[in-house]
Length: 244
Image (cartoon, rainbow, N blue to C red; front, side, top):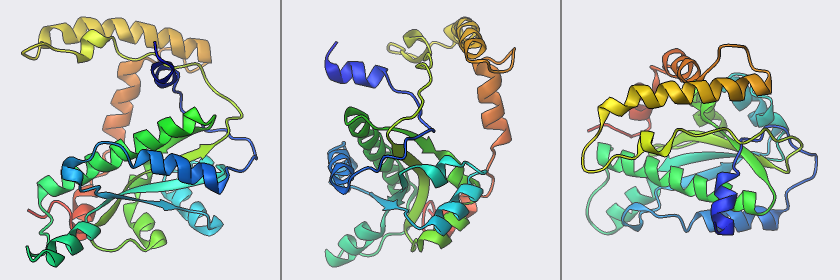
């Protein structure tokens, strides 16, 4: 394996950080590297807000369900789908304002995710660790208000970064055959592969001291069925996304 492949396969979410500050140079280096992620038609439909104000961090932490690492991490970033620059570019080019089309909204969300994953990989190459914070979507209106996000800008997720104080063991992923299909989708392999993976994850969680009986299916079912965030459609529309 190349060193990049080894780094990618060593990823774990880090929520406990040393007090050591992350230099401005390091932050700008990893964000600049993130910008070289693939982007649909070179639109680069994302922005990132660095949050340093303790009161803003506290409000966002509470909105995200009380995740204390949002407060304590040396660096906290909020990644946004951003169509605002593109709206200006379209009007400047004489092609009219954006209309919040679903395709544009999807492209912006994909662009932001690719950018953020590049940033995290670059951060890990510098000895940092981090964790994504999807919980900011519990109350996106709070994040919008705290960060003064205008129309055509929507907060998708946060990211904590810093030098790791603690690291868990790498979490096993689904078998490759569970996600790889050839020429057509094979539904018949889902159940046996998930059942086998549940057994593997149950052993992993038991080793970490997580409640007995926890496996992949039970954990993702709770995540999907209990975090419904039914306000998301209306919030997106208010910010100019998915209107048509």
